[in-house]
Length: 113
Image (cartoon, rainbow, N blue to C red; front, side):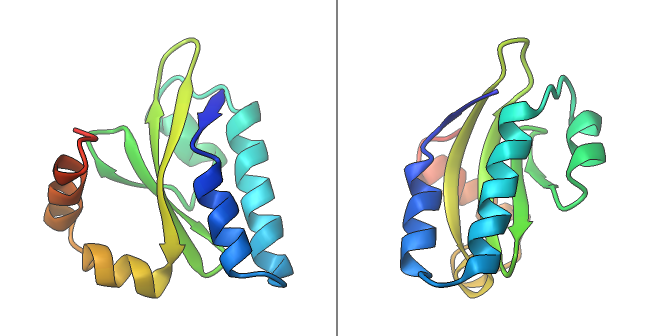
């Protein structure tokens, strides 16, 4: 699968320099995505049990170490993955308030849906 907006994860790593567990978790996530042949959501969650669908079967949060990242995954043959947001769990709670309606509003406000 192709990944766009990798720079978002790069900024997360840069902000948390020296956190080797985070770097390894991000690298593993990217590897899993690039090598993934996910045609439907069940394929994804079987491979990444930390994936939490938060909107429409296409937007997922992943737990990466103590961080969260929001990723848009289009389940198509040529599969495209777009990283939408990444931050610490505290950033996640501040931004999305652990609420799917807030996530949906954020996605609309940022023209993702």
